[in-house]
Length: 401
Image (cartoon, rainbow, N blue to C red):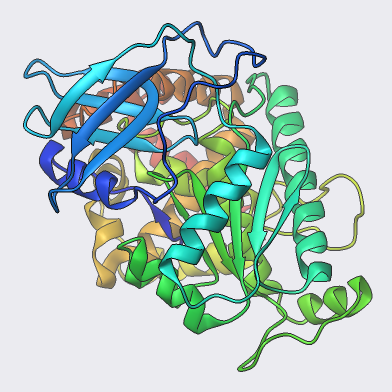
């Protein structure tokens, strides 16, 4: 099960959640005159008073202004902020254009935030073409993870280009935190107000645009892997955990390359289905990613067991018209397996229609949630009659062997 943290909240709930993500180093600054303009958006310096009564300053661009004067703001680290009219103290524009933080600034910011949370070991920052990794674990594990993430990023974009769906390079450096122990991992998940995420190997936090992972080479104690060879050997014994890392990293890429839009109405079946489509890891390659779209036997077997024993005639409709089945413990595993099955079927058999559907969902407005009827209408417009789609999907899955 995924740990993509992307709640559908009321505006006030979203405000409290987003404000809770503010780190102590989010400063008003406009000292990046040498950086290119980001979509020519003006830089805003927003003073606000958070739920605890503390005054904060957020430097960013305004994504949405509500009718009541509330704001949805994206700061220079890529974080999202929802600010109610009651919390907004001032909104100034110094005359500069918005630009993302540099990799060095982003790394320092996350190191400062982790140090403020406390309880972590000596932190280091590693930078690659698309990632900024802050970690307190061994450098060999960091190097292995960075190389895997870069391969996945490039393979993701190449795959969709071949499919006819064009993505773009991430605007922001992609932050990743790797922690050496489960205790520390759980502590950060608690700080992120998503304690349930500590039960897995990683999670992608949409509000912060950050992926958090636990050291895959560590057992009950901290890892002793001192070389890349040892890391590969230990990771090879833990392929299920690697699958989780790939799944969460795919979420981060998809939300930063133009496929999904943070805080718009992305159906969970779609976001999870795409992450599961990519989650079969390729641990044998140093370059490329040859296992994209490979049949996921665990998901397929789970769906077949579900279809035989529990699946109802309206199962596809209930998967599409809301996210409810993913939120309930007794139905979540079946919902994930059905989301994988549907996504795999559509990408393999209806790629053009799937691309058109992706574009429609990516254009959804911010902070507006569709009614069930609209979700079903969007799907039917792209793929046709629901019962016929269901029959074709089941026939396709039976042929997978």
